[in-house]
Image (cartoon, rainbow, N blue to C red; front, side):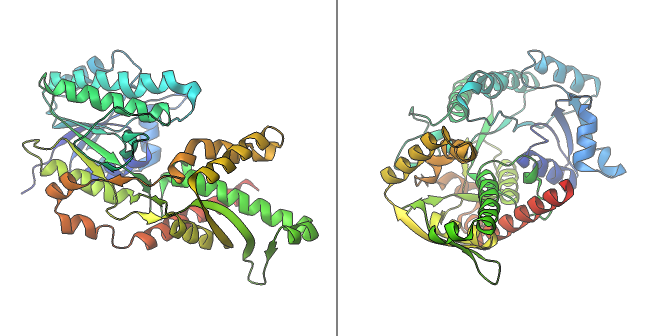
Length: 400
């Protein structure tokens, strides 16, 4: 018979956090959620709005109004645990500042690195393990096979990657001081749930998908208003309402992108902690064993956007040159600013293939079982795109 557990969780309102909380509550576990209130909305109200728990489930959920930038967060949680007479089984740390912007470097460091230090202090006081969600891109710009048991200094694309690297390095050092921990490194998460929460704050693949959706709508309007110019540019809409673009130099030759359904990530992480009683391994890549090619991803995405394009694959240096041209043109044409910003944030990931080792994940989860989780990767992507685009259309209709 399963023994119910009690977990402290940060980042419960996020994309991954919502799924993890629901999984634990459904399994009968209790959760203590660290949530920041604000703008006239209490932390408890935010949770009530997001989760809509029934009366029995509400008994499993406790909420503490605090955040990682609060220097007293560890003491506040410790006091709450003592007053509530709770036996904590672990701390799940998912909260993070996801900004890639250089101007946010200090804030990213305060939340992702210094905030984690505060939770490490709490984990040691409560004598419980810390389950930390990092990123598969903690390896920065390193080439070659990226191993779970390695953490090597490198050049980073943004402050977010660097903060995750610093935090992982700190956790390894604290292991010598008695900290028990597990690090999870998920790749790019997608959601195949009809109730996908990604619509509220698009990031990763969804950020690009949102941009492409807006671009396609703009192109359709442009064709309607400037048929002759559009024809010269190779743009047309056929009788089936499919948008045709003659060329779209979008891809670097043989580039892949590693996409993981968020439900798969949650199931994998939970199974790993349940099977890791002795903490023999401390770091796990939560990635697809076989990443999809960017050509396949583009084809599926364009299909769902009702667009057909002759995709041209280019060398990496040419593609990055195109990104630079778009950046300089955005200084002259404001309509390109949004595209330029997204390319600046995600361009590196779109032009590089990563090779992630999953030996430790497969060792704990089971190689065949883990691989089978990704047997429908193409259809998972197709459905994720379809759900997201449908929600974008619904939002637009509501705003009219």
